[in-house]
Amino acid sequence: MCKNRVQSTFIKKSQINLSSYSNQCHVSLSQRVFENGIDAIISYNEYLVTLIKGDQCGFLDLRCNTISRVGKISKQFQNIQGTVFEGGIDAAFNSHVQNEVYILRHYEATVYKW
Image (cartoon, rainbow, N blue to C red; front, side):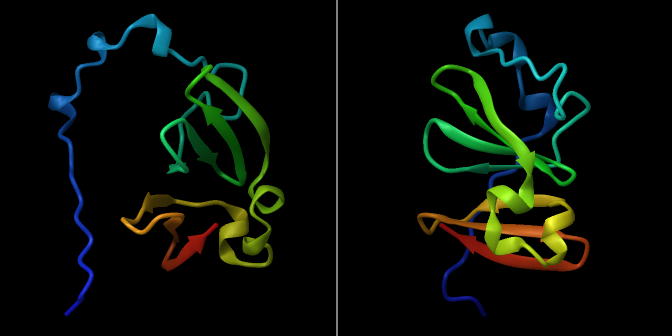
């Protein structure tokens, strides 16, 4: 049995009310690698997240609603070069430990720390 249990909160689609968000919070993903969806999101702090789609990633700054440094995952996260994660990440979630995220692809999982 795990000594450090991970608590997760799942939100039903019906509980999300997008009409409550103002236009100020809107970030346009058109003309970018993310316009057809996002595979995973990694949160670094209250204002910076990484968006991941296929083998590409970009950094979304929530303070100014801009996406920057779009490129290959393997160039942004050099620790995953030569691993199955270099080709993409299917899902990711932040743990309750600071600067730690679990990443998953196919049947592989690992903990990434920064």
